[in-house]
Image 1: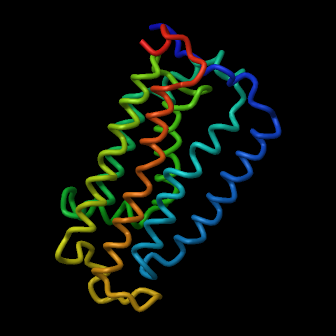
Image 2: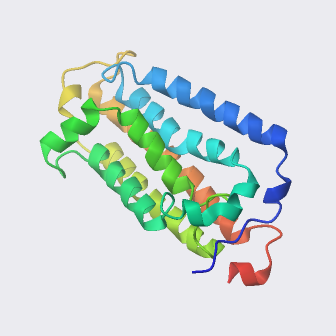
Image 3: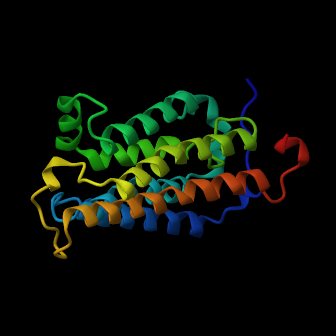
Length: 220
């Protein structure tokens, strides 16, 4: 299989910007991890922390990867395999976002475990399909389609949370969030947060299709 095409100009990404991206990604990860300390404080804030780990920190951390690593893509082929990344990303999104689909024991184990770490790792795997140094897909349009497909579960979950007539998560039924917002309204806010979290993937997909400076053959 031909190796993935490195995005034009990726080799010129200045070291200072890579360091800045890594630093910002680390700060976002730390702030989000701190926000997960009290899951019952607010469903909206808990969702925002998870989405920061899943959608904001990964692209920043991956932008810090030097372009020279692209030459070693064969070594990264297993870690950043598109099918593995998509399965993990979509599976985790569904497992933790739509209660009742999976066995309660599995869902409880996910929430009891280091869920934030799982979200960060899943985000790293999936965003790795979209950024130059780790992308395994040969054509930019293939990566764009993958990005759009990955944003669909978050959009669906967001709509379910926003439109649901009842609170979907048992722990939130009798809990008033830190802003004295009723649980159902808190859930709707969480849905809006989830909806916004899907936008970076959609923007990345559009960028991959346009990919300024790319040769027409690379877009085909």
